[in-house]
Length: 179
Length: 61
Image 1 (tube, one colour):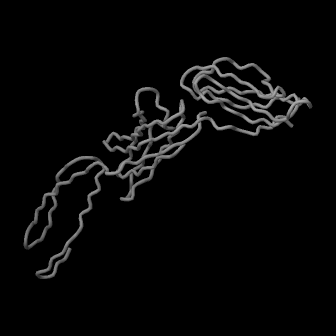
Image 2 (cartoon, rainbow over the protein chains, first blue to last red):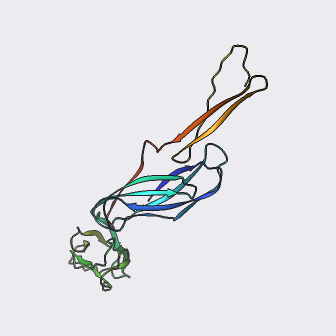
Image 3 (tube, each protein chain N blue to C red):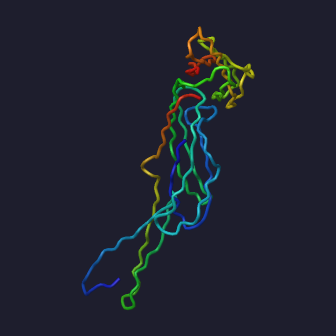
């Protein structure tokens, strides 16, 4: 998330309407403004009043995206800012510490795509497993808690990886550390 | 503004447009003896020459 800062110079209180549009083609925009309107008090001098609007980038897929942020007031004042987003493959995470036999460790996993998809969870070490079944295909933007169980079997390694996959994308990898 | 005999001086006019627009306004320099000096100011607020931008980079999810 980043803040777009601008200065309001009008000696009158007003409100700026916030709009974000995708400019690299049709489809859902992966930039979002935190607020729909920015209230501005009357500027008392020529320095104006600094205002800000937070913009969040939540990519739906890997690659580049472009958008434009526009702030307009009823008086006709307009501010704009180009938005450039670069989304990379998921980065491995961890190590996540998993106590043996105790209650499972929960990891929040969100479907970042803008379609309902099924995710498959695998472990490369049978010492680790999911304590509960996956809820099935996840709605866009919806998160679920993956409950990881560590059995602590002495004949198996204490470290492993949880690999979350879906069609057409690189996997999400979580390094696990049994304790 | 006070001028000595045969003196000349410059002064600055600040124009701070808030919108892209064109307008005209009148400026008058008044003197009780010499009368009024009328000027028409043509004001033009143009689009900014630079475009601001924000760049974001993150991993999917």
